[in-house]
Image (cartoon, rainbow, N blue to C red; front, side):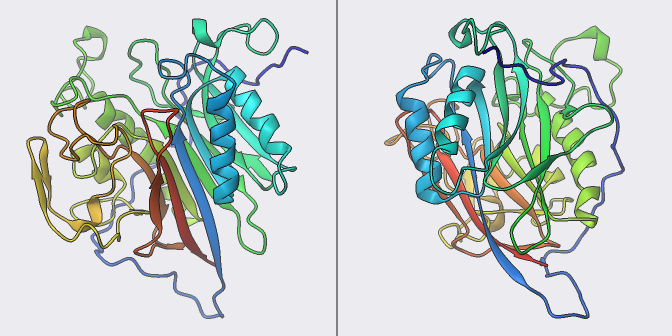
Length: 349
């Protein structure tokens, strides 16, 4: 049976963009309330599957391993990047066959087309490369205008970077707006000021900054106001180091002007300031364990693709969530050049 996907066009969407809400507060606090608060633990998992270049479209062992990791962790909300749609379908079907995941919901969007390793005449005739969200629970698609995703713009190398969100019905608690994204690699990786030499965008106010910076700003302007209304989580491969300017839009602490905290941000292993050629991790709350690289490489960030880097994140807003010293951890897998990020957070409602 041919499987189709709704609303795949890579058109820019500017709806729901609101001014960024900034705060100077350095210490997150639980939401003020006059009634008794309830707390619910929520487990999230984020993974760049690396389904094309690393796994060559394989729907066998890499999918089975990812399914096993999700089930072993009993992840409730799962964000995924870089999958052939054939791999997505295989993972979805395997998860739905596992106890506790029978009612799995999904929100998936296409980020690339005509990827040879992804082609399947029935499941994926368009060679789609996708990203999206799985949940153990019922989840309602979040619309951005008439589109079930936000196009981040600044397209480069025909990569259509997007943001996709679902309102996940957490049992016994309020719904969580879980969002997944994948921002562009800074160009070149070691120069934060890189921007493609494109005369069509030379008058852009962010020209002279990286595409990564511009896309992070688009995301933050969309999701920051949402956190005033309901709990918000942002997961994904942000292709940026914690202490660099693109992530100022998300971090609430240490020079950031966002409203989020990263699940590894209170890990007691990061008490020391670390300095690198690319910059300085001047605050322990903007560090974290490496998520891209390989065992045995130095965790120094100095040489991209020759050292390990933290570029995959799970952010939660500080108005509705509490992050502890053990909230964030990573899991290695032989089937990706990224490691899996797991976040255990407390939802206060």
